Picture 1: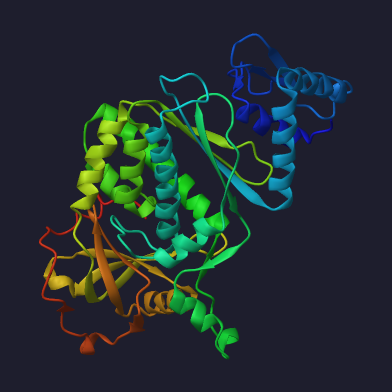
Picture 2: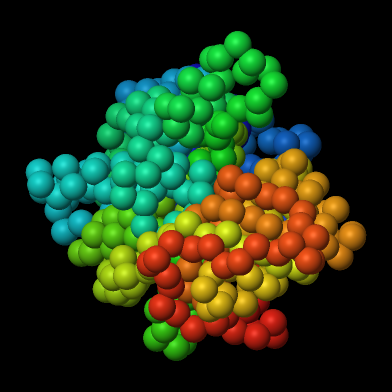
Length: 399
């Protein structure tokens, strides 16, 4: 049986083979060990070597000999995944039960918790919040409905989701209705792709790893709240804390032909994640606010997808807000650039959220340049933030 070299690593992982740590950065091969430790496969990495194909065939033959039926099925699934442009997200949990088994209720819970993490990441792709509730439910449902569940794999209990990378999803029913209207060609579609959703999930997992490492040095929960801007939320930490409880858990996201990168959460971190969940649930709900201030920082990601400004607030927010970060679309960002060049105040109106020590406004419904002599008075709802002003410029960190 032939197999693409890029698929072999993914198949080995699903067969519960473990990859030995690399001794050097430029090693000519990878060493994989079978679950029982009885077999060891040397997978060549240098495709320009004269013996590459022979070594690859030998490795494939050795791995296949351990379980030909399952191996062939996994190879076919890898081919299907590649042809359909599906990304594989795998959750693997160590349990006291024999390999591949888990108690019924724990198995049901693991599937639901994996689903909750994808839902949280879909919502975080639209806007960053500490708590979502029913927000962006339309997008999350369509993303889950478009994903598949792979067949069970060997080893510790494993759940695998296959999600479409290239497909786009409307952020709401209203956005889809607008896109199907006669003037849809004049409107920038309000959609996000499966690739963006999984990237949000991956970034959030990395942020949580940093928070947990920092917590091990100094037990502070504040970094978890500040990580909301990286896609961390109440829903994500809650599902992870419950998933990790009772057993080390690994998450692997494989996109395209990549073998993926494993992110491991050890069982003791469940208690820390539970504390973070409590802190995120207490974060103040967003308020409607109109802010006016000076644009002091502009940031745009490579490709122009993420446009953020920092506003030194002069009016708005009840006088309690010194700085706010605002995420803008392309047209709004150009207006902010113009305000910065002209040293004119910028007005933004929308929902304002406090995330740790930072204030954020996502998707403002109004952005305009105002003359200094006609700056509007403070306009917020009666329910204001009962929080101190942001730290000074030297302590609030980079955007």
